[in-house]
Length: 247
Image (cartoon, rainbow, N blue to C red):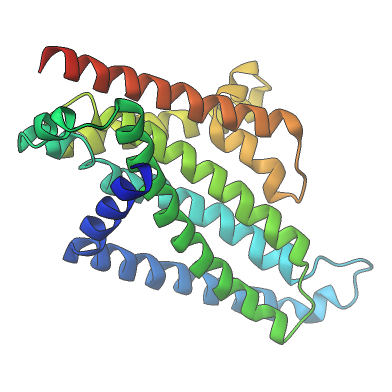
């Protein structure tokens, strides 16, 4: 049933013209940043040639672009999560879904799975664009993989938070704005705390994704992402259960 719900959400997502417009805009923006970063790297080749152990294309081009993509997706993912539960409540179709022989766990996990698949397609397309560099220069595919994995975990956190906020309101726009504001606040915690060494930095998902951006995979970061996703999935399931009780 989880897979069925996920397929239904993916079909609904890809049938909306706004989805294709946003994806096209994302690819255009990412390609523009990619070419700009690559051009800057090529212009520095003469200086880098005189430096011992100079950073390669993976460190100079790929890793920064994944950081840029993470910021762009932080703003875009709430636009996809906002309608998952909020719109169903507004259209009064959530009552029909809750009346069906399907558990709240299956509803939430199915919708979350659709987001995971959708995010994976976006990350795979952008990663494939960056992998083209391997045709003309040496590319560290290990660093490329860790960056893609870190971004996948980070977008999973964005998605589950957006899904939870979508369960709290009937207005998709309100859900999207709340998600963007909260994600931006978590990002500011990372940026601000990195300057003064505050322990609050550990609360930010982007702080735990930085080790992946550098090519390292730490168990503490994996545990954080697992706990973050599990917590908001449980909160969303509880919210949907409350809707079932009072529907």
